[in-house]
View 1 (spheres, rainbow, N blue to C red):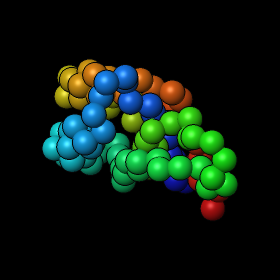
View 2 (tube, rainbow, N blue to C red; view 1 turned 135 degrees about the vertical axis):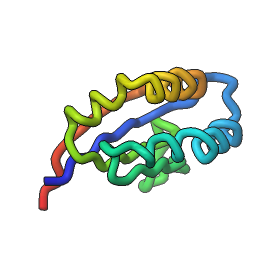
View 3 (cartoon, one colour; view 1 turned 90 degrees about the vertical axis):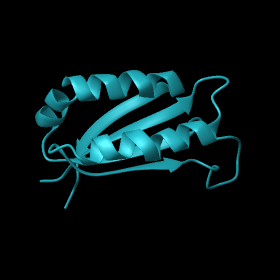
Length: 104
């Protein structure tokens, strides 16, 4: 089975998207992609609604493919991930965090 975690994020007021994206490349990707619980991880900047009706409700979508939800949750409690999440929270106000099983 394949499990995925999704974060639908908005940037905090006053955060420069370029600063956040540089942090993703410099810090977030190297730490997260080195985790044994994470198989793949990508962040997508949301640029608009497909139907072109109104503004999107979120700024970024994170898609994380994980080995197991419980292993991923446990990894999130390690000192390295706690520090990472503290930094992440200075840029992002979480809109929604979801997880599920891929239908194959």
